[in-house]
Length: 441
Image (cartoon, rainbow, N blue to C red; front, side):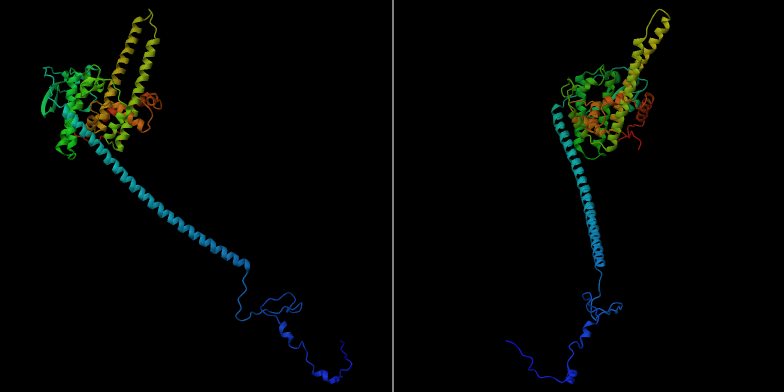
């Protein structure tokens, strides 16, 4: 179908003035606004920058990079706060756990102390029952009209002085006063103590141990009559042991190998656990342990010094050649060395006595000695083995290392041991129930 435009009527020319302009008013849509438009659309002509004015109620434009920075700072701030709160909770929890640990440790120590005391008391009661079965009449040696004193005994053994502090106070006493038989005094002359047979001494020792166990079982306080009686019994018994160690042919060794319940000598086959158990029942304080280990160090330092001196003297005597020339001078030299060897042996013996006195009389109390005697019955515990067992348990150097230690020269070892001799002079009868510190703190 085709359309024919030739038949359309022609309009007058002036009628075009009334035609509608289709672009009339379109310019208002090309005016710049706050809303960005595609490039080249609705923008001012080149070379003319029209001012941008915000439309009322519109949101200000925000930079993307600035927004990211603000968010990151805020997140870091929150992380720091969270970390701070976490550390604070950890600190509070740590303090709480430490307080609980201290409290639990204190409770554990208290329970261990109670357990040790109960265990010791149980041993004491068992020993008391055993001793009650063995209790019998006590008979001692008769009093002889001899006036030998403690000083005479020590001099006969090569001592220049009385090392035991208590015997030094009674050095002019010629007889021991024993009250073990129902508190009735029994005088035993000093020279007769060495004549006691093992069976006789074992009977006396058993009687003392029996009464000590009864006093310990009383447990009515440190200032009770039972404790005063315990101190008296301990003093008498250990004075008797010290004098027997001086007067008996083989010293205290036979006593330590003797079964006091039967009065029969047996080889010392006791294991270290035996001595560890005795030391545990004595319930040492920390200062006492420190003094014991220090005494051990000084004692073996002294023995090492004497051993080196003795080795040097024997080496000189062995290598010394005697010929016919100046024979009198050479004999005099050998005599001098022999006398030095004798003095060396006497000094070693005296060192043992001083060591035992410091161990029994100074560092330990009368009650601790009584506990050791009762718990060790029927054996008399050896002081050096008790101390060695404690040293091993605490990881101290072995005896051989201390004997061979040359960190200190012999003069320093001798001076240190002289301090122990001075220490013994500070021990008194009144202080026997107390620990006399060896280390000045």
